[in-house]
Length: 187
Image (tube, rainbow, N blue to C red; front, side):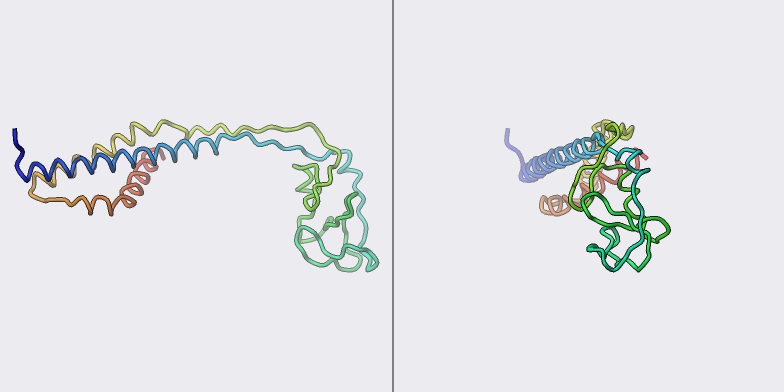
């Protein structure tokens, strides 16, 4: 059985369309897997020992000290300003300054942020981010793809002749549209 030129053109059009859609589905599913993997990573904190934090020595800055700049905010210390010097020699703002100083860092980490000198630590705290947003997007993706195909078929039945080039050029717009529609369906 021979196909008419119009039927051949439609066959080529739909073959290109389905190839494009397969590529879009692959890209969006891969993106979803990567995002889910990153969202569900376990983070580990090893805070500095509370005894060590309690015993940290606060002193007032003098011009004779070798470190003259806070390693956190990079602002020079002023004379008689409260500073904290870690055993490695790095200095940070202490209490009563605009800079938060080293204490917030040490509550989550047992190292100097500058040189990674290890300080006494409490037990390791592991936190898993169990995100409930990690749902299977395939049904939503199928719905979006079916909507696109139905619109193209309706346009063809109404006498419009879409071009393969137009479909390929709109590939990124199509992916963004599908991604947005899926995101809106989830939220």
